[in-house]
Image 1: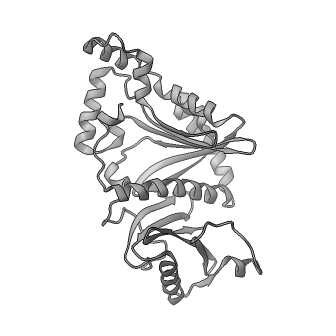
Image 2: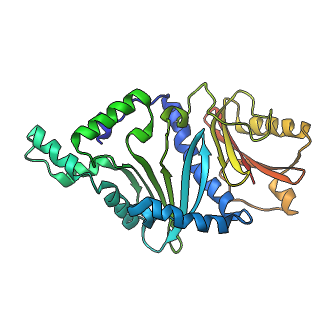
Image 3: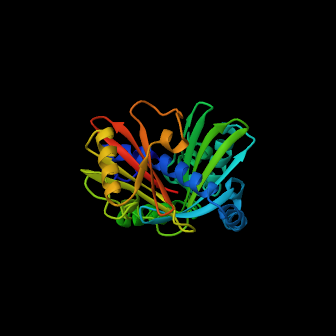
Length: 314
């Protein structure tokens, strides 16, 4: 519905909201990298793809390779594929699919308010939140089923959501992230069909999200955990922190802690046997952590006077 009037107050500060915008994309991309490169996972993902396609009905056109994960204590399903179509076309099709079923609620709103100058199609667009950045990337979000029961059902859904902050009260979460690639568009599609607590998903300034440390007992000093995500099908995931300390100091301290735990700490050049460039932005650095066949990658990046530090378990 209308963002200005119906969007509930966020249970966090504006700074935490910034963490979320950075973190959600990092989480999705990192976890898909893990899922698609893990040995033996591709076959399982292909089988799940068909199942998810059947379950998602009209949304199946967006479902590609699939995997389940737990993000900040909330279970989600993620699907990925590359389609030979531009970002704008895929985003428009997604939005149109989202709006399907909302005509009744839009028509009833016009009837009850006497808004003769309003058009049903214009009101239906309010059921989808979308953002496009040129031809390079775009995002959209909607809740499947919202609007299908008419205006009274929409009102009841938002009333329940205001009491519980459970996003599933609004409908089935459908979120898509699109990025232009050489041969078309990379589609990352996220669905949530069970209980989905907004309080659980959204980080705060002084509270860790649900989850665990990537390495037990090890975390950056003066930090808050704002992402904890792991795959259900394999012991792989990502944990991310926001620290008040500078990026270099936070990474150095983290490396010292894991060394004390018996981990080998390598920079990328040492791992590859020579100089290698990752094309990282200024101030961004990473370390490879190894122990007993386990490998993790710790990456730090600056954020004003503080920093982010993420740890990916491969």
